[in-house]
Length: 395
Image 1: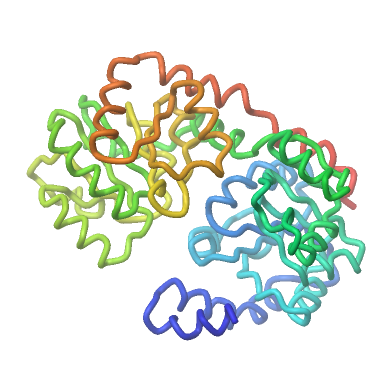
Image 2: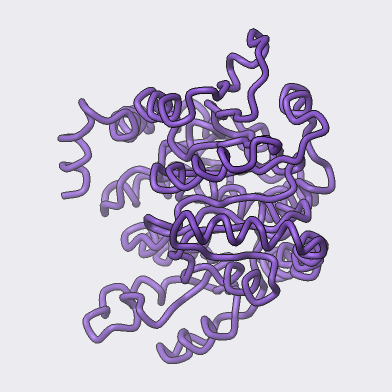
């Protein structure tokens, strides 16, 4: 049904089109790049965010076992399109849809010695085929909540999927307790590997000369992964503080959305036109993907988008640089958001007045940024914990 729906909307939606076209070519690409007689370490990610989350484990394995051949799969085009040429992998592919035949064919084609899935990825046929072939399967940075289907009376099918996992590396005690309710004892708290990744980024930031020059000596407010509901709030804030520079990195960079941003912020400059623009502006729109994690190094405060939709995006990329964050009301699924609010280095808002109040509060609290960075530093170490266990399964 999902495949049918995606095919129906593909002519009108670029993401759906890429989703279909990428999978049409996947078997040919695998046959060209992967030798099925060789063993591979398989990492699967839903999208780009999960790739960055699991990347420290992948890179640690490759650094300590350079002979290992890595295969990466993505479910979403946004991850695949950005990382399809990732240098440490033998091949980067779309994950074929989760059917019995696809799962059997794919596992046979890549011949995995272990499989590593990140956070929320649970696939019935793939997990079953891995289990039948005695391939150890690990879930890293997992997090479970009581309202998930696994813990409902009607979630038997989904609970059976969990039983195929060899070991759960989870983020908190609640997840351990919930798995124990299902008689799943093969779990341990490792924390969240995103902390290792964002700390690494902050320690070795990529210099962005055009961004640096735009910022100059001004104070900078960075809005990352924004959606239209977020951007409406930001307009008022930018008008109220003309002495600040504002950098807005929207989650979607399609032509229609960028045109909407141009109308909302008529004086703004787009990043791709920054070299040619002579007039100064205090608003910069980032019209490409992949720069946001490095842009945060130039900010004094950040707004994280998504909190008026499905849920907030990555807060840790910002706080790793020692800057406080603001986000909308839908943050409940994210343990780090609760932690940051409790520590006073994040504030959640519901409207323009809340955004202005949060902004003012952080202007007066100069210690919030230091506390933010300290929080990230204290949470590092998940990668090493995970590696110590799975290294024994590497052939």
